[in-house]
Image (cartoon, rainbow, N blue to C red):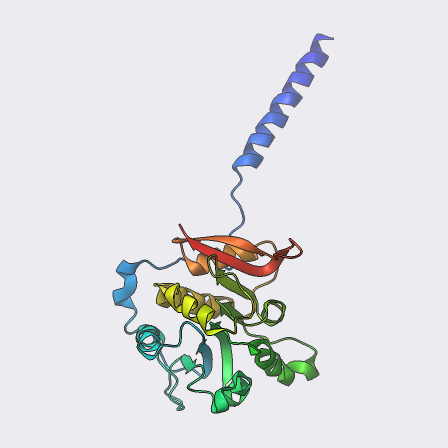
Amino acid sequence: MKKMILLFAAFCSLAFLSCKKEEKRPLAADPFEIEIKEEENASLTSTAWHPTEKKICVVFGYGYNDKPYVQAVVDSLAKKYGLDDGTEEGGLILPFTYPNDFPAERISRLPALIGERELAGLIVIGAPENTNYAIANLEDEYSSQETMIPYPVYAFFPQDDVAGIEATCNFVVDRAMEGSGSTDDETNKEEVVQTQVKDLDKILDNAVEYMLLTQAPLPGDEDLIAHVSRIVGKNYKVSRYVDAESGLQSINHFVIEEQ
């Protein structure tokens, strides 16, 4: 009997040690994890770019299309990644401003503006109404392969239809104070200008880094919010978008607010 008690005690000790080891076991490394660069590393970005065939298209729309503002953000990206100039020696970033760069001020002309360029990613800020249709048209060239766009598509602070932009982008990010969905009147557009993020250049830098790292659309799973948190940076709290009518949480639509 005493021997059985000793054996039982030994078994319990081993089980306890096993559980403690299991608790201390490190989590598997996240293959998509990137280090969000701090300001002190900014001086290293001036010579980081090189000629590339693939481009990342950045579209500046409502609330983020003021010429001096766009120029400042594009200049910041250009220092690190270079700008596409239509030649083999061109850099990574292909910027367009809506409506100025779009024939007849129609966002549907986006595929024509991109032309034959091969994209490594598409980022749309302040997407105007019907942007989702323009992105869907970009998918047409892959329809014969029965696949969606093979590169990442990120949308920040869109004014497009909620369901449409969610369906055509890997993820959608809104300002918590802005709400989301289609915005047609000038009063609301002016409000967006007043509440635009001050560090968009840093967010776009992180977004471009993520696109270059993953080289594919982000999976729409429970880890997507963690990826978005890394992209927008430590200054923002990220929450899932909740539909006002149904109360349902979106899989790939998020709202951010300053911490």
